[in-house]
Image (cartoon, rainbow, N blue to C red; front, side, top):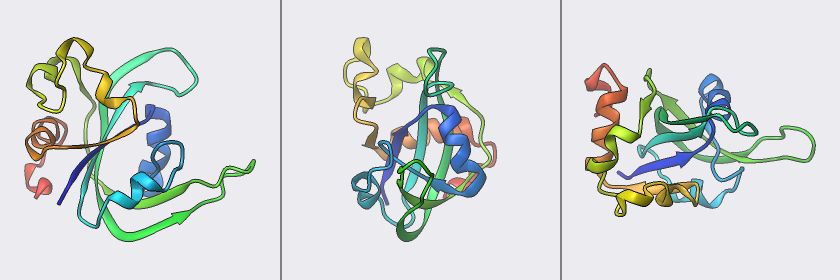
Amino acid sequence: MNYWIIVASKDHIQRGLIDGFIQANHGKAAPLKRMQLGDWVIFYSPKLEYEKPEKLQCFTAIGKISDENIYQHDMGGGFVPFRRNVEFLQAKDIPILPLINDLTFIKDKTHWGAPFRFGTLQIPEEDFRLIAEKMVEDQSLLK
């Protein structure tokens, strides 16, 4: 089992929450192909809305890859992104700033945003647990 973070604005994540899917890196297939059935995914949202400047800097969703399928979906206007199905958990937004010093995947605490620049990253289980336990009330769901 692996643990991932996908970076996306909260408004984009909410679309996936409704229909139980994820997209990564503006619809690219490669990040989704690295994920496997049963892997966990946490979403980090630097902004509230994609094309607006308002910062959010929170972990905003968490889910588990629910099957082996990677598929495309026509969203119109020639945009046909790749998706994977995810079973999302009921979760609350958690600010990243209080966690930075405890997250091992963030090596340089003064430039803490650097690991997020590629849009998808694999993280250690201990970091996943630290974030997930703050986001999800029912800890039994994290097994």
